[in-house]
Length: 238
Image (tube, rainbow, N blue to C red; front, side, top):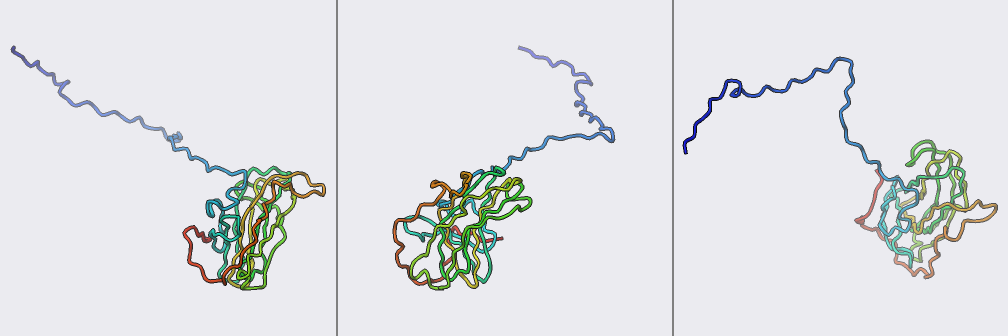
């Protein structure tokens, strides 16, 4: 079989012309596609109030915090610690607050050493995610101890709560906060945190489902306080 090559014209042999860009007139805005950011999920309920997943969901603003087993029958508790004379705190923001609605907050608190004051506070804000302007605070009764070696006897735990408190009419979020005020290095033990809607009180307290369970076991005697190494789940401010 014989083959023959066909002659190639000059036009076919020449490389193709590159595409010509269309000039954009001055003063004309051109939009280019961009990636759409996925908004972070906003929690409308308190998360990890029993600290089963360590300090996850809680923000240490001052001091440091980790989880440890302190209150018998309660599993892990959050230990909020200060190394100096200061006020430290840890908090979690809850979105989706209904303005004018009633809420209740409660927790188990215990001291580890001399604590001037340890208390639960609900702070109301007029913007989501804990931003915006502060509208006011509702505090639960505080606990304290003057004994620097109190944990050598037993954790002095107490159930504290705000009872029913009304969200301000402009509230959009709430910060559930635990504060520790001390004149020396010490710790506040936190567990069974609850924050949820409740009924219009008219003199009534928060419903039973909003209260933390009281430990059934009697706390055993504990050894004298000794410095603890930094734990794997410890969170520090800043």
